[in-house]
Image 1 (tube, rainbow, N blue to C red):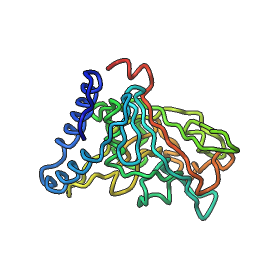
Image 2: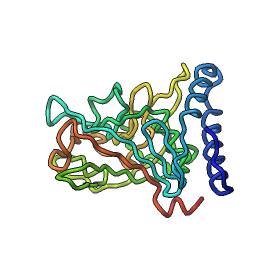
Image 3: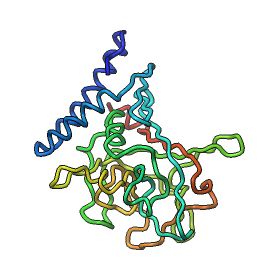
Length: 248
C-alpha cells in the first residue's frame, strides 16, 4: 500500500499503517516466518479508497466514521431450534454450525479492522472459561445487520437477530477484546472461526458484555421472525459509539 498525496490523507494513512505494524509486532516470535508473510500480504492487500476509507479483503473501513462493514450471509441449520453461541463466524468457520451468520472474511482481517477504527485489546479481557458468568470488559461497540428486503434496506441491531427462551433480546452491550494466541502461534478466533460470540467463549474477537444464554445452554436461537431466509446476503457493521470515539 502507498499513502495518498495531501497532508491530512497522508497522516491518516500513516496512522493506519502504524496500527497494522503494531498489530503484527505483537505476534509470537515462534510464528515469525508465517506471520511475516501474512503481514506482507495484508499490507499489500490494503487499498486506500479516499475520504478516510480503506478496503481490506472484503472489509470496507471508514476511519472517519470509526466503523467498518463486511458482507456475509444467513446460515441455515437442520433444526430451527438449534442452540446458538455465536452471532458471526468466519467464512467456512469451524463453529458455523452454532453461528447465526457467516462473514466473508477471516479472524485476522476482522481483528485488524477493529484495530483500524481505534479499538484496543489492552482494554479488554477474554472470559476465563466457556460460559464465564462474569461480565466481559472491553471497548464498547455497536453491531448491526442489514439486508435488502422488498427493494428496501432493512437494518437491525444484532441482538434483534436472537431470541432467548422465545423472547427477543434488547440487551445491546457488545465489547471488543480481541482474541488470543495458542501455544502453536495460531490466532484462536481464526482456528475456531469465531468472530462475535454471546455465551462468553474463550476465542471470539467481540463478545456480548453480560452474555446471553450463559448458564442456559440452548436458550438462545436465531429469530426467524426477523432474519431473512437462510442463504440471504447480509452486511454486518461494527462501529465505535460516538462517546467512545470522542475519547481518542
